[in-house]
Length: 316
Image (cartoon, rainbow, N blue to C red):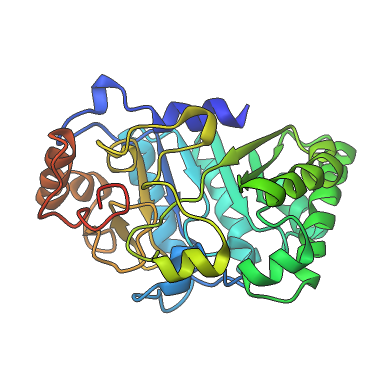
């Protein structure tokens, strides 16, 4: 199940609790910096260093080849941007990952662009896991939080249902999953009702997430306007929360922007977490760069004062 895989990544084993750990188990690669949502809680909304286009497929092939040789087992064809905004590249990337021998290729999507046609193309290419992020209980909240037209709320739910139908009819070996932010009070009750009626019947597993602070892009005004307060840092899913220090994303999962930058943070929108440029630097050299090793050392010592992580809500 998807939660077992998530927990295996967010749990830092002794083998990776070091300044220069082995290759991460999982790497998320951003295919495009574009997204058709404007979510109030997302780092993409305030991204200051925006990739200028989609990832070059030649670069994708080279870096995934380096990752495979290094021992990476899982490739996520997404990061901050919505990969379905580049559908042909997405299908091409999935096909390459599976042809290269990676045992697991996964995708998270907001669902609004995951049409039945695209879903079937992804599954036929070999996608192992398709997860829908369902984070609004109704069209009104959707407009308030996601900042786009309510039609996309219904599109996402309908696409989720049809993805399940496509999977079952085509007998594809692709898990269908969904995650949702856990709210408070009446809003959470509405979410639970939506999940029970429109999501749970069509997924293999659904799980809850805390509202991540996403680095320095949260403030009190935003909290008041959206009606909830984020948790510290990225502590994983609610039923298996991890300590904020050391942060697992620095040691067990890689994150690559559409421009080919290896970043230390799963919510990096400033570009300040760049640990290496994979256009010119081999993946493992960037993974073991001096800047990355120094940051990990601070995390292991649980003292990130003076580092780029100091401003995270986890340590404020």
